[in-house]
Image (cartoon, rainbow, N blue to C red; front, side):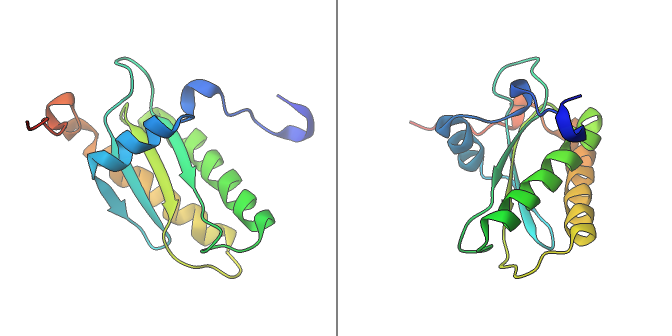
Amino acid sequence: MTAGGARPFPKPYRLTKTDEYSSVFGFRRAIRGRFFLLHHGPAGVPGQPARLGLVIGKKLLKRAVHRNWVKRIARERFRLCHPGLPAVDIVLRLAVKLDKPARAELAADIEALFARLARLGPRLSPADAPSSRA
């Protein structure tokens, strides 16, 4: 464990490059929650675990401290739900404007989205990938 009781969010579990985000958004699969949209796409590398990317826009949540706080909640929920998730790339995007977010409501929404994705797990396969039409 690191200082202050924080748990690490290792690089193999993160989307880090613009292309990785673009491929998830390009896959055009999403699950709608109360506060978030959970976009999911094919796994980047076969055999790789589920990876998470976060998009918390300034237009929807003005204060940086609140945006960072929402990201911490999302990463923690991802760590807890990760073992049950299919091996896909995930982008969790804030979809509604918030003034003063409530931790319990945000965490419950994120967990519900991850649970719905886990139920889709067996149906998410490379065969679901969009075919390239020339």
